[in-house]
Length: 157
Image (spheres, helix red, strand yellow):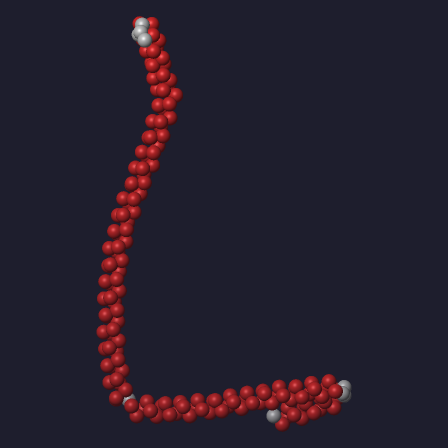
């Protein structure tokens, strides 16, 4: 195989045509794709860096909040202990008076409960009377006689 100058010129022209076509048609989309990819990667790295920074800030903030919460809980415990001691002291001083007041309150509460129970019992009796009247009315229809019986029953309650 012999290499002639015409073959070299033809191959050189073909090579330069290939290079020219590659530079005009293939290279710009490749460089654009690489630039876009580089930009996305740099944005992703920036977001990751910001996230890491925000994570550190949140972590330090959480540690500070926990420390403050512990301090507040200790203050609350101390205040509660102080208040408990005051209450015990007051209870020692006012024991009899408080006992009498509680006894009076208990008696009035018992009286109120008795009154409530009576009222509930009255209501239940009235409900039973109405139920009985309903049963009577189902059997026979004499509304005047039944109304009279209901009125008498209500008066007795």
